Length: 79
Image 1 (spheres, rainbow, N blue to C red):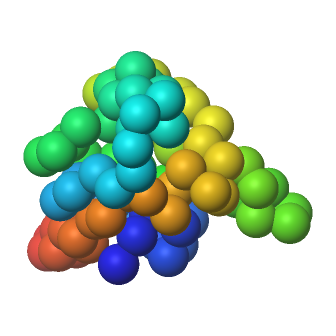
Image 2: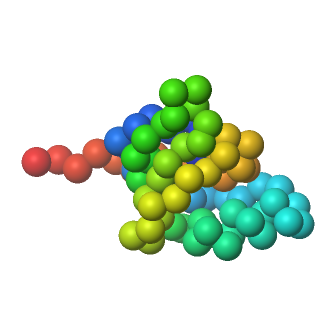
């Protein structure tokens, strides 16, 4: 599953970053690294960009970059 597959309001954890060179570097420069939790805040009307919260920062990620971030969904909190 990739970051692009996640829905608004879900939280996921990064398992692996795909891509090479400048693309991978751009993703890592945003603070997206293995083990980091990402909260999906909003999707633009056409799905690009995807707005997320990472390490307390609000970021916008292109769909193409989101496809390179392999994630696992976190279990919902039980109340």
